[in-house]
Structures are given as structure tokens and as C-alpha cells.
Amino acid sequence: MQEEQLCLRCKEPFFSQANQSLCNRCAELLFNKVKEYINAYSYNSIQDIADNTGVEKKLINKWLREGRLELVSADALAEKEKLLNLSKQYQEAQKTTEMEQKTIASSNRASMHYLKYNK
Ligand SMILES: [Zn+2]
Image (cartoon, rainbow, N blue to C red):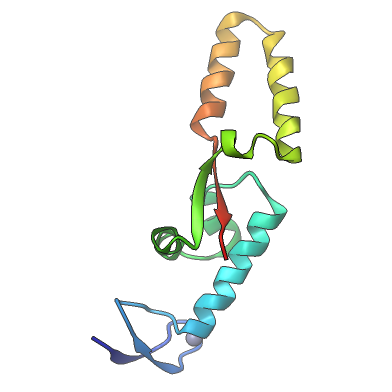
């Protein structure tokens, strides 16, 4: 069902579908902002993107559901150049004690999901 309401961002009236709070134009603007952020920082998280772009997590999650954004594991990005830095860090870590190694490995694994965009 469509319902006319005011866009939260530009205050222009628009027809809202599925509880949208932003008009399409504003949503696209924000999506481009997120895209730019993802281009600039391959290592990101939903929280990270929300904090740095000011885009609500709710909206980021919506794009994830729609398949416009995708959560990928670091394995899928492994061939990417930027990941080389991480493996260097990991090799450094392997020089440390076994105990420290485990901590570093598990903390890396916990954060090894990044967002990429599809279109
Ligand atoms: Zn708007």
C-alpha cells in the first residue's frame, strides 16, 4: 500500500512503500555515500559505515536484505590487494607467543566480514 508522507531528510512529500522514511532521491544519495565509503575502506562493518557516513543501520540492513549490499567474508576478499597488509600483520603475530597468536587470530576472525555493494 502506498501512502504519501514527508521525506525525513529533504522534507519533500513522496509515496512511501514498505515503511520507507526517505524519498528515493535521498535514499540514492545515501547509498552513494555508503558506496564511496566502501570503496575507500575495504575493511568496514555495518557499525563502521553507520558511524562514518551517518546512514542509519536500519537502512544499511535494508540494502543488505535487498541484495544491494552484501556481507562477504574476508576469505572471499583474500585475493584483494588490501588484504595483503592483514596477512603481513598476521605473519608478524605468528612471531609472538602461541597464546597471543590465538587471541589475535580469533579477534581477526570475528571482524572478518565486510560489506561490498552490488549495484
Ligand atoms: Zn528526500
